[in-house]
Image (cartoon, rainbow, N blue to C red; front, side):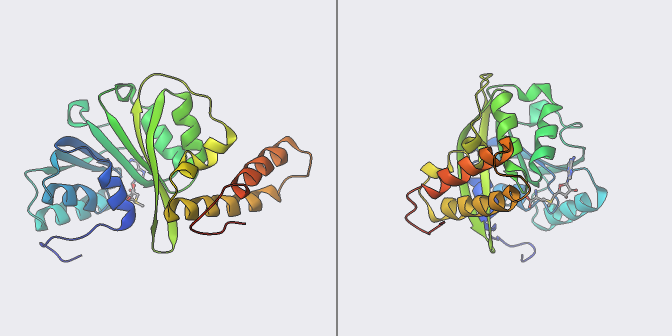
Length: 234
Ligand SMILES: C[S@@+](CC[C@H](N)C(=O)[O-])C[C@H]1O[C@@H](n2cnc3c(N)ncnc32)[C@H](O)[C@@H]1O
């Protein structure tokens, strides 16, 4: 990206940005380069942002980018493992992107103050999205909206979540593809197609008749029964 001028986010971070509420107080957990909070600040979308990371190197990178885009008055940096060192008053919308689903769930579990209907979580798991969906369902967080995107050659999913205290059953299908089958987009179909390929590989580790084999097979069969219109997944 060109230093000091406006820039575009890639599709993955752009989708995360689209779920951030206007004029919010944002925390970007695991910010690395801090492109997301910088872009939101440059576009007048947020009141403030804390860009945090557990490692000093990425945080120095973030600080340099924040200075070159002259948004120090809006975006500050904090060294923090997850949200451990974050003031809850600074965190109305919280983005956790580019990490594994289990780590994201762990970061959320550690902060009781996230169980608050006023806050919004925007989560983009790189792996184990199924563990994250299961955690959210069983911990009282509702996935208000989930959308998929394609960036480079890969597909990603981004979840917008809010706490309502209601614990939900998480079916096997929801665990693996959320509500993406109802999104009816090319991106969602690409994401679901990738899930199906992963499940087919996983299936080989089990013998027909094993509980896990039956479970995985029923999710694969469901995916194969979907009336995809943008791509073929069969
Ligand atoms: C792949 S980068 C993602 C950067 C950016 N969020 C994105 O999606 O493009 C992951 C970042 O998360 C940071 N990270 C890993 N574990 C963390 C934790 N427990 N707390 C805060 N940051 C963490 C890493 O240091 C790294 O900078």
